[in-house]
Image 1 (cartoon, rainbow, N blue to C red):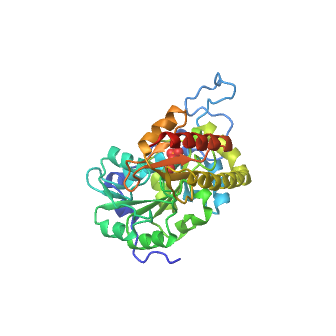
Image 2: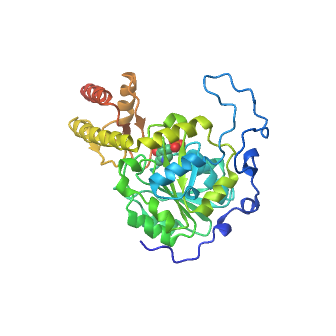
Image 3: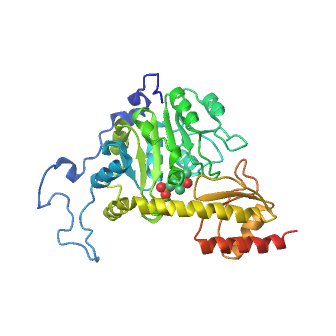
Length: 358
Ligand SMILES: *Cc1c(COP(=O)(O)O)cnc(C)c1O
């Protein structure tokens, strides 16, 4: 893989106020080495009133977690930012690079809704390049949409809600053509690990890869997201984050879960197998018009009357995601792969609904 051919100037891409910002230094930032008496941060020295003690501030830079994660991914801790879900790095990227009301971001609908919400919060205009009709990445449309105000391009791979991986060659072409930041959101990449572009952060100074502990790692309740990039971009995110943005409990749980990489891969294989059998069962139902191939832990399913099916499923206590109002997703439901017994329940419910429909 070739690197970029242009001079990448991170500092010039940043908002002027961020370029000049000096970060808040929290109590432990200035201390390096061994100590046993901590009287610097106004914590309650006597402890807390919970079964486990939480009276101390957490490590502001999550060093232990980053070391373990870096080893697993073959990177350096300096390439890693940890946040309160992927939402946090997404928000920080807007705040770092997009001057509100001026700079823009490109997204490729139908895609993850948070990019647009975070853009709106930051008053960043969003330029939309629709996916191609086969849900492939609209590379040409994206390239022609780029102009001098474009700071961020979001590439969701595998994409939510279509479940489709983006061709690596398309991402490479974009990285080589665009002098802003390319954000590749790999929230579902553990379900199709061959599709990752994570190793490219060594080659492309304009690449940010987002991953999360919410999906394959099964830790959605903890809120733990990861941004990987070259150390300069990571340093910018560190400068603008909340000082103690990841709590001590989450850090401890991440340390524990990172020892269970094999278990995670087993679960992924199980879910991928379950996905194939669910897809086969769905295709047997008359009102199911199409089940799209998926590289993630959900299926996008086109039915004859999505709104009706959605509500009838809800009446039976089954909640799926109605995506029929998204572009290219007319009459589409997004269905997460459940436990085997939940998937059977879903199929039975859909068979009953199928009989009710005209
Ligand atoms: C689920 C999901 C995430 C993860 O969000 P968290 O805030 O880390 O839970 C990120 N991107 C996409 C596309 C997702 O579907």
